[in-house]
Length: 254
Image (tube, rainbow, N blue to C red; front, top):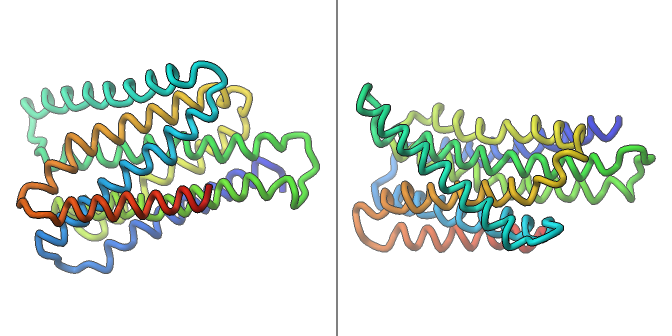
């Protein structure tokens, strides 16, 4: 097995853990609004934590020059692109039926998918660095550790997609399908990252911060307002728990 095959199979494992996280939606038949709001808040907390610990912090470390500028431009670009997409969806809504619920779901899935593309590239680039080397336990343990860390982080992220979709009235099967679908880009981007490591390495800092900006926009524009509709502290508590969960995974796994 060469480094390309290892990169592909490792990224398939990260997608599997995303699907496993999305499968949590099968355990909830019918929940009251307070619990659903807490889950929506939990998803918000996960996305906020992931945007920093999984995306911005690594982007700052990877940037060779002017990390503050590269990450700032990437972060703002991610948010601005989604703002433009939001404006486009509003215009489309004027010409055909496109509910705010569908718009919110589309933005949620797209933001998590954007987040998974650079993560897949990180896995691929890590394995691509092994090109030309003899594959031994000592030199493959590092890229495997990176893939495992990203995969474990993907578990709550899968839930962060499927549970809000269920909240919006999607069926359990559709909620699961779209949740796991957001992780399917990782094997593709990992393979490309390993194949074209010299090309993707320089753009990783910008790509990571771009995904972070997109995620923060979705949280602020869509998830937080929706979770706070009924008032109370359930959504806020869920956000705190989600942030803590994701932070513990990222810090513990390095």
